[in-house]
Amino acid sequence: MVKAYAALNAGDDLKPYEYEPKALEQNEVRIKVHSCGICHSDISAIDNSWGKSSYPMIAGHEIIGEVIETAPNSSLHKIGDTVGLGWHSGYCNSCEYCDVGDHNFCSNTKKTVFSQYGGFAEEVVAEEASVIPIPTKLNLEDAGPLLCGGITVFTPIVEFGINENHNVGIIGIGGLGHLAIQFYKALGCNVTAFTSSHDKTEFINSMGIDEVVSSTDQVILKDMGAKFDLLISTVNVSLDWNLFLNTIKPRGRLHFVGAVLEPIKSSVFSLMAGRRSISGSPVGSPKNIKKMLDFCVEHNIKPIVEHFNFTDINNAIEKVRNNNVRFRAVLSW
Image (cartoon, rainbow, N blue to C red; front, top):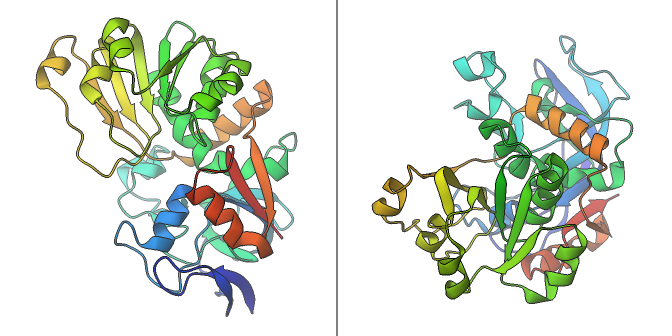
């Protein structure tokens, strides 16, 4: 039996739960879970915030572990490999997107949480294409959040060709934003942090940021002018998006990686004025996750993590719910 922690109903505290291990299918591997981060998406799954959850719900999708079994036809990983697993646990592997390595655009992805039992467990099963080799120089204890939070803010670098010549603004300095600062500063970008948490200002400045601005100060935003090539929003609340759009240069974009549930209100004239764009993206492809992990090793980038034992999982989740973790929570056995 596999030991896990599950919500039996929407919004419940997690309880110890056991289930029969799944037999491996074609191209699958079994991973012994060493640690798993807690993401706000896990809490959305536990609470059925997106209307897609089924129960018992075993969440968890920022997994670091060890391959302990492989299907006979598996070839990408071997027993004993240190690996990671993020939001996706499988793909169709035959569509136009999978064929060119853009697996995250596949319309038949399997989700580590919603399609199966996730990483708040002793083990997890996934298709080998979704399983990521972990570089030996990466700190395994802290690496889990890179597989979701990290790749979420790294993907725009690859998709939009961001480099040292770009001026970047990051809206919201939490679990995603503090990683975004590290990535974009390592690239050599000029980086501005937008935050409503003034108690974070000293810490944000310690990360070598170029400017810290209140995300709710309309006067400052109006006076800022068009200065950003890329604005990344990591928040899950609505802000005055038209004010932010007017701080973007011609051909620049406002890019959403935080899940704002309300419709985005914007003026078409704000977009037309400089051929500005609004876009969004979730997580990233396996090839880009590997690229991100190598970038983290090269630039010594790592999440700021608070560690918990799995036996303390409900306390850890409550701290994440209340935004009392700076900046990512990681569970280990």
